[in-house]
Structures are given as C-alpha cells and as structure tokens.
Image (cartoon, rainbow, N blue to C red; front, side, top):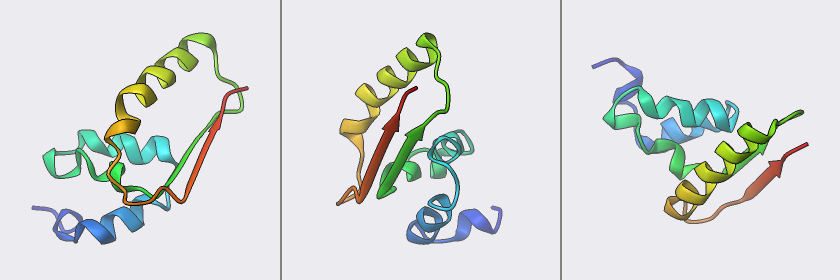
Amino acid sequence: MDRISGLSDELLVKILLLVPTKVAVSTSILSKRWEYLWMWLPKLDYGHSYCSEPESSRLRRFLDHNLPLHRAPVIESFRLELV
C-alpha cells in the first residue's frame, strides 16, 4: 500500500479540497479506497469558462446521478457555472 492511501479519510478529504472538484472526482478511479472519497467534500465547485452542449449534458447527468448520493453532512458551498 502506498503511504497516501494509509492516511485517514478525513485527511484525504482535506487534501482533495485543495484541488479542483473535477480532479477530486477523477481520483475515484485510483482504487476502491478512493472511489467515494470525493463524495465527502463539503465544497463543490463545478465551473467552466466555456462548456459546450455535450459537456453540459454530461455534467447534468453526472450531477443528477451523484449529487443525491453525496455523503458530506453539510455542503458548505456549491457553485455551478455553465457559460
């Protein structure tokens, strides 16, 4: 096991808060241990300077499916920007 995966979930969530939400979500492919860690993030930022219609549709499907499964006790902030 690598050293970072040996850290507590709370510490890993704090580390994930330091990167953009899209990057935090992408860590879910690293291993089963990381699969749902991003769902504990209390701050969600889905912003794009430009979002094409296909990207917008994918993001909408992603949020429709995953937002109800979010596990953080409180969502401190949520930003969704589609321009």
